Image 1: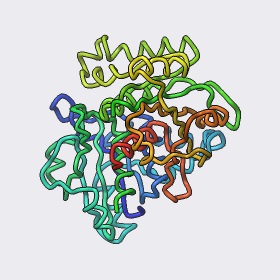
Image 2: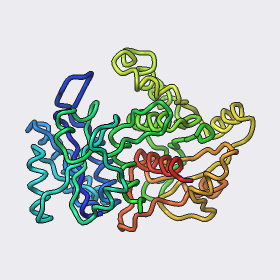
Image 3: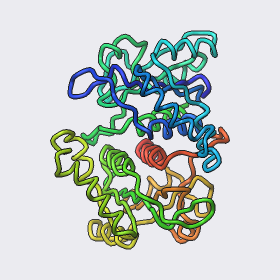
Length: 182
Length: 182
């Protein structure tokens, strides 16, 4: 799935209904890099507007890519080669355009059903186009950003009445569903 | 999926080919409780032989269930109601027997293909029986324990040549596949 790219968004995201910039979570770096490598994605982007947070993310990832962590855990090092830590969504799109020669479809995710919903199967059918899927940290991506995107993926709905997955679980499930769909 | 139970095993698990007891990871408590609640499972058990680790796990979970975290994040509190922190697999089985009135099938997971493999679909077809699925921390569950179980779930194989998912991702994907299978 080389034409699928992921971005983890730290701004603008929601907390208690307000737009915030969320902090970095260490396991978001590793878990999502490992999913992206396992499913052969085109790239995984951590997007954070704060330079200090990007520096921390680079240090944490660097420990495994070129530091002593590489000796201790070479599998983790390999997974992190797929990771790019960038300032903005514009940077992500520019990077994908350079690789793919065209602008990607940009697709949001949300725990709530949105307009412009696309099913996993319909997205899979667009396989000739690069697709960038955005995942939000904290309480999810702000509505204004979601409204500005090409599509929004159908939410994971199990019918249990409880629907509060971690972003690490949501990424894993969406990417596996994309991989498994015909 | 009330008849599906999960257990996260910290002993006996592998690291560099040796059997070890792994440490607790905070996000294993939250992420897997949230998956278990979202998919309506019967229960999620963190199994650790070390009393101090169980005390820490209980404190971390308790912050969200009855501490100030409950006020701050009631959704997380609800997810953790599904969690039990216990000493051994025997304790898990005893608990399930009390609820279900019968012994569960015990099913291992591994990144490597094993004997006695069961597919997701075949497991789903046994839906009248309670099933306990074991997930290993660190480098996965030790072979001797795997060999002693009823079945082992077919590994997640994407054909990418890289197959090193975090246990949080593996749990999310297996449970979603169970939910999605006919």
